Amino acid sequence: AAIGVASGAVAVTSCSNDGSSAKDHESVAVNKSIDSPLHIPPHDPDLPFPPSSLKHDTYNGVTLDVSKLPNSSAIDAKTFESMLDKALQIWTKERKRGIWIRIPTDHARLVPATACH
Image 1: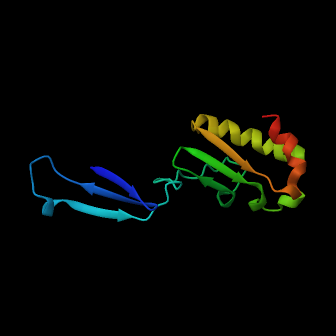
Image 2: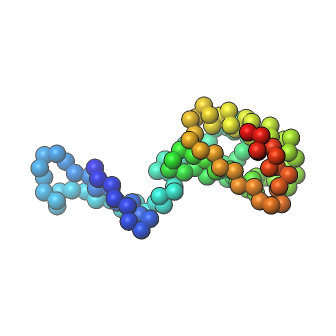
Image 3: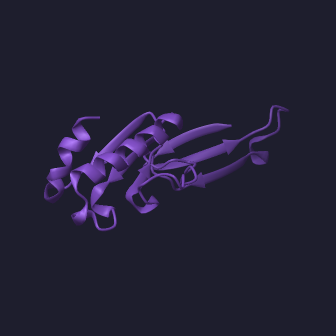
């Protein structure tokens, strides 16, 4: 199989090794961003963050968007640190390669809890 990327779309071409002609080859265009994973892992129910606050990427990384947490304005730094601790343990077991955390300015109180990890 050959994979080509052009303008943010991925084209996958499958061909056989039996010398069949080009007309026998199957070509499929997939509209996927290079930053979107081809496979989104199932959500671990033990994660303290809902799926809506997480974005997975092609590099086996995950981005946590604090502004998408339910009642995010009510989360204090100690609670967030505990939630982050648990999530990092799970993501370490899942062998995540990168963890990104988006913290809007109005949630700056959570930065120290994040920085200690």
